[in-house]
Length: 109
Image (cartoon, rainbow, N blue to C red; front, side, top):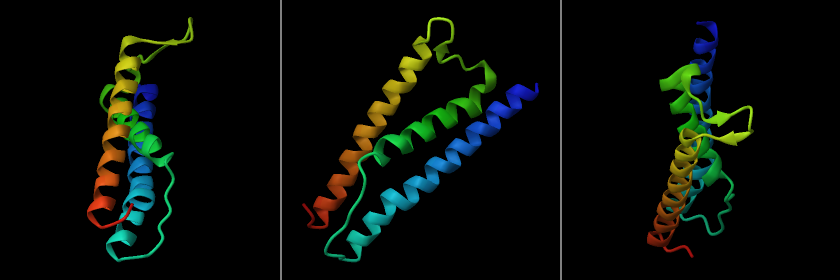
C-alpha cells in the first residue's frame, strides 16, 4: 500500500516538474518571441524532458506500482515501456514541430 502511494506521489511530482520546465523553457522563449525580442535561445533537450516527465508522471499516477515498464531481470523494456517511449517520441516531435511553427508564424527563422 505504501509503495503504491509513493509511486503515485512520484507521478504527481514528475507531472509538476514537467509542467514547470515546460512553462519556463518552452513557453518562456515563446513569450519572448511574442514580445519581439531580437534574439531568443532555447534548448532542444527540453522537448524530450518535458514529455518524458509528463507521460511517465501520468503513467505512475494512474497505474501506481502496478506499472511494469521494464523487466528488471533481463534489464529490458516491456511492451508497456516501449509504448510509453513511443508516446514520448511522438510528443517530442509534435511539441518541437508546434514550437517551430509558432516561431515561424511570428517571423523567426
